[in-house]
Amino acid sequence: MWELLLGLALGGFIVYLMQTKAKSTRIVTPATVVTPASDPVVDKDDSVRLLLNALPMGVVVIGADGQERLRNIAATSIAGARHADVLVEVATERLLAMAMRGKQRTEEIQLAGPPPRVIEVRGIPLEDGGALAVIDDITERWRIDQVRTDFVANVSHELKTPVGAISVLAETIEGETDDELVLRLTGRMVIEAQRMSRTIDDLLELSRIELGGEMSASNINLGDVVRDAIERVSPIALRKGVPLELQLGEEKHIVWGDFFQLVSAVSNLVENAVKYSEEGNSVLVRVTSEGGTH
Image (cartoon, rainbow, N blue to C red; front, side, top):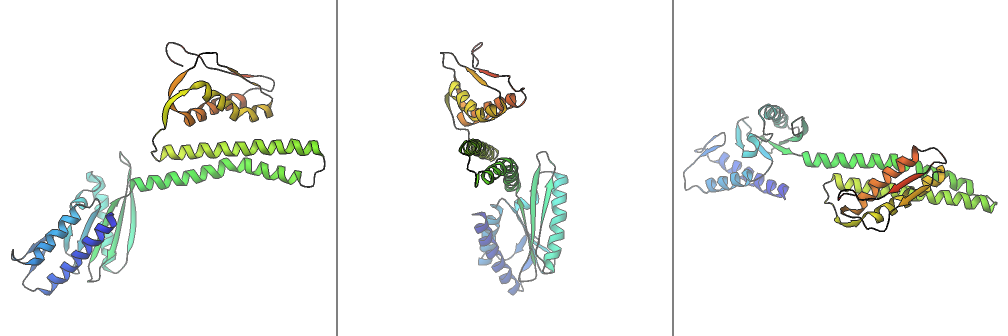
């Protein structure tokens, strides 16, 4: 939407520049046009300025003579801090100078903050020999890109182990005639596939949270949460020889929260308990109420 508005505004401004260039009686100064009040070009110029000032990104236009023709409100202080605005202004001047030579360039400026921000500055040559700079705060877009990059890296890392295990088990089964061994190996494959499925669910949930997704909260029975968590960890506990014990009692323990996030959190706790337990030891999971809390 903003790109469309920017395109319309710049199109109108370029037409305005062409019209003012053809009128020798008109004097153009930085950000000011001196013409008779009845001139229709003035109304068009005012409309362009109003439109550009409504944009959230900064816009700076210079003419072929190197003089600044227009600077909208956002371009005057897009960073919101004096030292940061200086950095943005230096980059803007540099890219405008390059655009005047017909070179289109883009730079990203990472500001430490607080809060940390990322500003993108683009220098664009204009047909009349002038140049245009567009200054945009891309902090949110940059953050989402980082989340996406981290998500892909996490998926690659977390899925490498179960996928590799399934591959090795499948190669072992190929051509095997011992039914008991095949049954044992297929059981291991099921365990690794379940592990992979849990990992994918956890990573998708993590990605949703990091992208600002709302929590799907409701009244939840903690007993159901713990049962699901133990079911997730059971294959790992069985493989290591660490029995899992569950104590719930008859009372229901109702809490307000996101079921899947709670299952993920409890699963991690139980899995860590299993990992750091010696073979033959057991892990006890108990849900109780104390002082109104669970």
